[in-house]
Image (cartoon, rainbow, N blue to C red; front, side, top):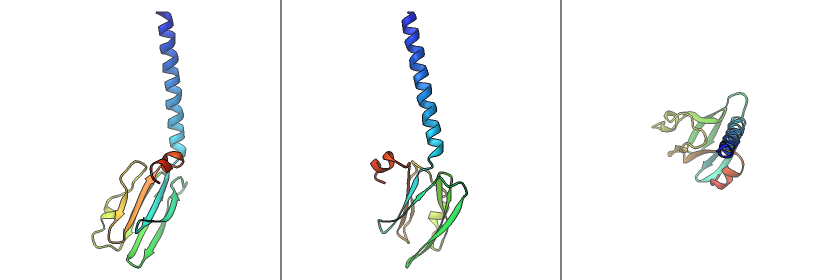
Length: 121
């Protein structure tokens, strides 16, 4: 019985260390956003910026202003008629992509590294 308790304690300690490592790793990697227009990659933006910043995407169909924050991205302004992309709010890794249909813009967010590549990023 003592051997079983030692193994259980050892297993619990290993699980706790792994969980702590994953939490720490997740806090330093904000992920990346892949911005596509007409299904073609327009830009890849790292989401680990220390300070929030905004940038514009202008095409013949209109413009979208995107805001990058720690681990998140959002469309904060657009000249499309329904502005559903603005109303959507910010997205992070694991969320459904941001879409602006009139401008044929999509923003997919995933973690950086192997997971992002394997996930189709």
